[in-house]
Image (tube, rainbow over all chains, first blue to last red; front, top):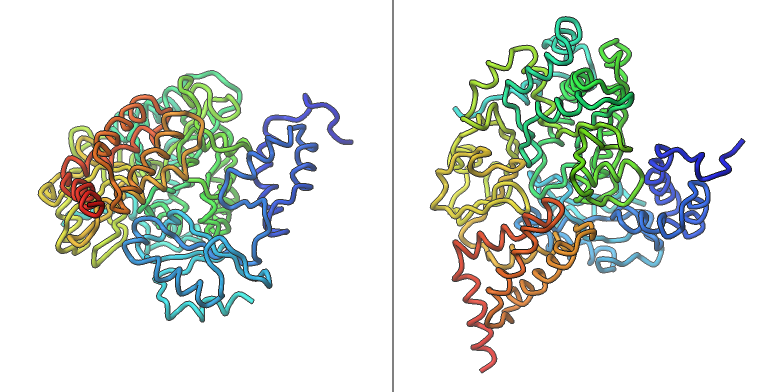
Length: 147
Length: 404
């Protein structure tokens, strides 16, 4: 017994859309077009509407990303604690630049805005994990955890 | 000693995963008192009388918000706790959620009782996903212990968007849409989440509620200043020896926080409030911290004398241009335009008239943007032009010299 008409989709159900997009991101490493089309059909929305949500949030990507997304914070408190030095160390360690993905699909690097760990700057995230008080020396060991 | 822990009274003392440790410290006594001995109207009156103002940056009177929502007739109403905490340099809510989710849950429960809401949401920024289990566990323990018979609380996670800390964009996000800001009126207590009366309060605001109910409005209103009652939890970062979270009585001098507690030296300027907070040169270090002067959400970023002001303002504007939701033209176009001009300054390529251009573009943003992001975007530029104009002018002269 499924929903047939647009009228039957309750407003609150559309609220699930962001969570569903995040699920796809987690499962596939990005939000494939097919998933967006399926969700559009399921929630009786234009594809452009779903695309609009998928491209609004920085946690979602419509292009494939690495298994582990390294987010280096570039906001002012981390800038004051030299995030660029950390970024360069990471780029050197895995051989790619920001906004790129390693050939083996293991890592992507993204620059992100304030992640709320300013008291322990410079800070980065790798998927859901925080790494704080980062130094270039700690980078190889940190990245080793993510195989 | 300017530190006073009301909001943070349990942090580092209770076990955030074990409700019994919270109950031992008067946990849930406030909600029992509210539901047992006070009517919803009396709870609203008590919060109004306390003078509690929002702690997320805007400082709107909490009691007034609750009153409006309680007076709007509707079978469905909502309480939303804004735990999006995206403001630059702010991490106080992270600290609170890590250490004392129970006080927050009790505060949400009391709000629900006051306005007649049976559903509550905690909108948790996606970056704080590591706190999800702890938060849901605390909610479950509170529910199972019978302290929340009247309300169901659910955690809804964000996905990395600064503007979703703005209350109306936050609601659009919960509704599964792009986090776009809404035109007001109507205001959320009248028509909010899914068109229903909704109260949205910051984490720290709700953390104050149980103590106010237990100790009374008069107790609370005797702390602080004329128009800023109670304490404020500050997040200090930047060029300081001791970054971290500090809870101070409203009206404490900035000097006490920055120099005494955080041990900063050689201070050039301090930004209070966040990315678009007021910028104070060191000469103004004796400014009291309160809504009447400078406060915002209480992010305090300290810059020493070696810092390049123009570059910092450029990076801030770049951030705002990235995070603008894009709905209104003044902000969407204005932040990009100002970032482009500031980029010229940071590269030493600023032209004659660029300062005037910045001041001109600031005007429509401040006056006509739908929300605080756009309205306050010009603040760092205008403040630094006021106190450090020479730093900008140096960048114009430099490029003239280079060209010749």
